[in-house]
Image (cartoon, rainbow, N blue to C red; front, side):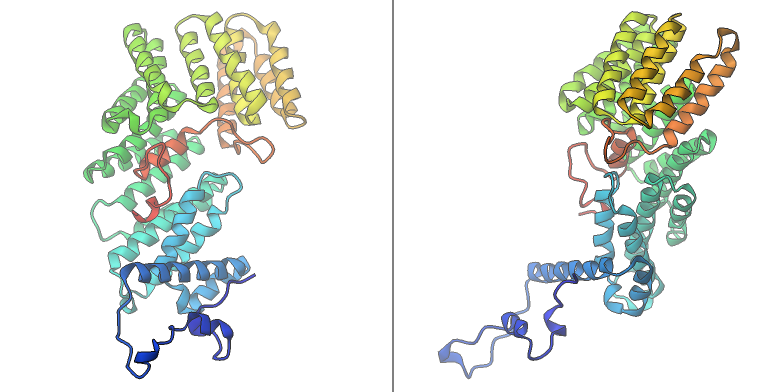
Length: 442
């Protein structure tokens, strides 16, 4: 149901006008003209916010295919503050399951783009309009990326650049590069993603934005680690931690970077460095302790133990994480962890235990788990003499798992994706800060 119209568009005889009318003058001053008092800044802001919420509700009440035409036909909808309101909503909804971030970001982008097109008739500075339009398109690209709509996400991220083409380095350009880097990581195009992530980090550094630059390098370092490029990954992760500064700002992400460095150092035979990184990570655990983070860290410490040549300790840790995900996590999370334990047991010469792992996955996620259990069983059937083929199959399987939605309404993800923590850092938000307000710098 549409909201009540504002007083200035109500009919003359509508009783709601009386409620909004000025109160009568006191009896002794009935014939005295009222003294003009300009509204306070707070009152003006509250009135504007009320109108924006009213207009937003009107737009959302329309069918999606009529919204753009309504914005173009009615100048009341072409308000910078309304575009910013939709951007705020889109950013706060970005990583929430079943959110409406695509439609709210799309409305922000449409309104801001229309305002840019009529700059001469608008009282807002051109740079402010351009920044709002650029941010709205970035948010739309991010929302589409969450939905795995990669072509549309790329188009939206690339729309950022024309709005700021006449400038030097600026934040919208850096955000667009960071968003495109994430997209190409999802598509498995690591070289392109690396170039874009480095470009984003460089742009942020030119703007003295150390923490957003750290976010770009964290994303790159974790991706390179997963791809097996250990030396390059370690370089990116160390740079990220230096730029981040105090890890208390985002302890969960900092702990993950340190755990990744501990695993890399172990694989490279640098046990002293590995122990130091692991100890630093563990000191951060109490700052963000929860079932999701405890499960994530148990899994990562299991990988470190495996790299150190302690298969029994590794199996116990990964098994604990796997059971937690079977009970509380999503199918994709549980499949990824089961794959790690399956590969560990194959390397340890325990193929006989593999059916127990795949059966547990299938049983915990009926009926969808059956398909992924069969995929894992196929990987396990490669003989040791065909290790290269098994490696290629595992690589393809991991890429598919990365491209799948991480959960659904029945079994949402348990773990917090690193990208969620990284996106908060991109927007200057600490781990425990409210994300609302970042979209407009409030």
